[in-house]
Image (cartoon, rainbow, N blue to C red; front, side):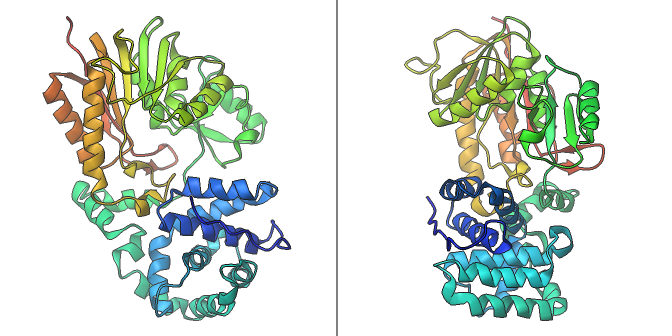
Amino acid sequence: MIQISLISPSAKADSLAYQLAYAAQAVAGVRAGTALPQALAQIFTRIDKQPQARGAIQDISYRAMRRLGISDALLALLANKPPQPEVLRGLLDCALALLVDEDEAGYDSFTVVDQAVEAAAISPDMSFAKGVVNAILRRFLRERANLMPLAVKTPPGTWNYPTWWIDRMKAAYPEDWQRILHTGNQAPPLTLRVNRRQSTVEQYLASLAAAGMPGRQVGPSAVRLDKPVPVQQIPGFAAGVVSVQDAAAQLAAPLLEVADGMRVLDACAAPGGKTGHLLELADIELEALDHDPRRLTRIDENLQRLGLRAKLIAGDARQGAQGGGWWDGRPFDRILADVPCTASGIVRRHPDIRWLRRKTDTAQLATLSAQILDNLWQMLGPDGKLLLVTCSLWPQESEQQALAFAQRNNAIRLPAPGQLLPTASAETDHDGLFYALFQKTGA
């Protein structure tokens, strides 16, 4: 839980000051170790009477995460010591992100400074620091031309990632590391999966055009909107015609080649995007497993919107094959194993990940995933297929994991995309995912 302080009730929700004050609390929450979506959810629960501010608070918070390296570097130059409390530092992070991205963010620089000072004034934890906020931000405006070249002399200031992350990316992808880091700093697209039971890509593109929301095809069933909109405004979303899902993630279900009557397991299934896709492709008996019962609610909501059904199970994917767990002993024809990982391939959607992860996380999560894979393999029937999926770019979690798994289990490796690097272009736009497909030999 993060510490949430309600700002002055006289503050207007549509003001930048109001939005900066709460975005500052979200950024402070991340610095304290809370994932940004959770930090924002806690804030939105407290300000549920002001829904019009949510989008702006979220946008500012996410922008601050994508510019945290440069804002830290600038604050080191602008202040004698890191501003305290953390919420004050968070406010300066948010304001500096808007100033650094002035052309893209769409706020006049003097408005940002004025509203940041007002944000401090209306916040009980920062009201004492109005002068500090004003002095730091106005100095940045005066000395921007000299400060920016100094700030980007450090790797985090240049790339907006921790130094260890940058070094690891260089080692793993010596030819592509700069492009990968740059892509991760961009705002993600809104990509949809067209439900083949209800429409085709061509038909849906026509529906978008008729609604004045142009888009383009970026995958077999993937459509990217030219301009993101709230899901409530997406044509056919409520009726299950489309779902929000990255183009790379949409490759998972077709790789398993499910057919009517098959018994299928979607392990580590929440939030259920791949679950729904599998059910759209064939009439199968599907079990969706997740360790957190609360996350199963999200899967159920998605399936209800699509008009599809699956058996939802709360259980540990590392257990069950030896009895006494959630598995009933009947082998599966197909298993989708979207295993836990550092999520290093989806940082443009979750920019806080880079600041929350530690170097040691990769080895720990790779060990956990290996345990899951070995357990699930025992549940696969003869000639069945298991698909290993990660949203990681680190080889220890992807290719090295796949090689070790195949060797331990004498698994036949089938053609699959392998490591997909994140990319953002007019024709191709997807996150960084890894795919390895295995088949079990017949009895």
